[in-house]
Image (cartoon, rainbow, N blue to C red; front, top):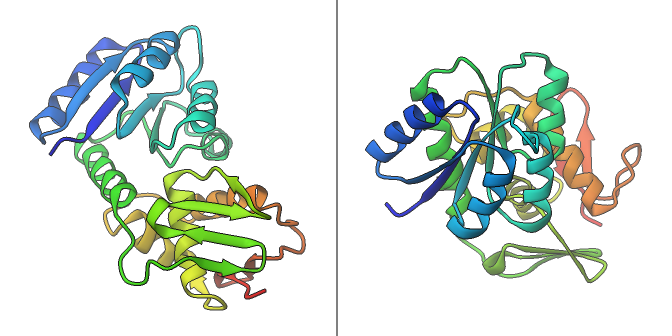
Length: 228
């Protein structure tokens, strides 16, 4: 196992505890204790996943999350002491792939790390040919998405969600099924995670939320990609 994880938290004891557990599992781990150091470490360390505390000196975890997603394609798990769903939703809207609330069970955190790294590093199986649906083009071998011939940036989970739905146009997937297929059976989240990712993908596709061209809501059931 050569996957690298960057742990960012201003509490050194938490960083060291997470680092110890991850290294025991075989991950290569670096730590950072504030926002500025985190920016430097991401550039030099090039991690496969970031565990990011929300409350940090100099630059908040929310702002870092936004910055990272503008430049990199790295899965992010937010650590938050806040239990308000608004704070969790904000993190997901800014590009986090997952969140976990302090205090947390280390086994749960490890399970989420394994699931995110496994799924973000998977090469799509089966048909790898280019998927085209109207102005939407997906190039699986490059994990690249084009809309109107312009590449759009998707986080690993956003891409996985869009790719799965696009492989099965007009097929309706429940939120629970999407959680299982995209986040993995060992994911501990809830269906609001799916809703937030759908909203973000729609925005990046330029879909009208009230009458989306591609990613449609089937009320009371889940979501589907419409064949244009």
